[in-house]
Length: 212
Image (tube, rainbow, N blue to C red; front, side):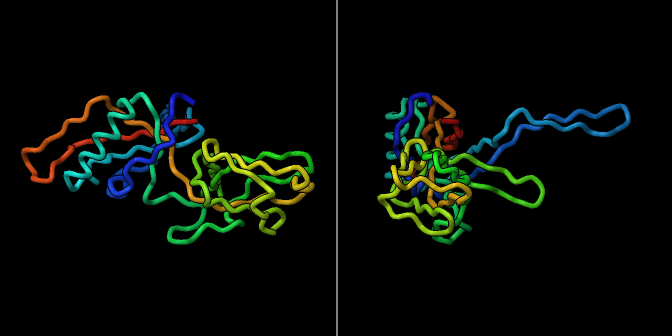
């Protein structure tokens, strides 16, 4: 991954942001009037505007300081998506059976975290690269694994089983977790306006998801 700081954008500001996933779909209309639709990207890319979350001078100062430390667009960072930041349904705590990571074969030790959306027609499997440390629970064959049976790299989102604890052939490996999104600022300039509101206002703070 390009230069990345394992730092979380100010949470109180992020929770007031507006945005969501974006897809890139190419549509061609044929001579018969039918459409041919295709996408060049396997994964959606999320965008937010964090300007909506700035409500006070302390928040404004925190955002400016965070922006300066990231050198604008230079360094990536962690972002907490208010709507979608867990393996379970909104409002539910993560459980070890939430998401299927793979199936054991007796030899594979590493399993990448992922979250699946949908299921009836074309389920989408989203890689999770930035889990929140201390929230990941893992199960093998439906039984929760002890903390010492596996380790987690929170900077990559990979669960690694310790020797002697490798998932046996046919055993489903599942996990539950909270996660952040790897992002960067999508601007090198913050236009800070203190004239209209006593508390201060940043009209636009564009945030863009990046790929590890």
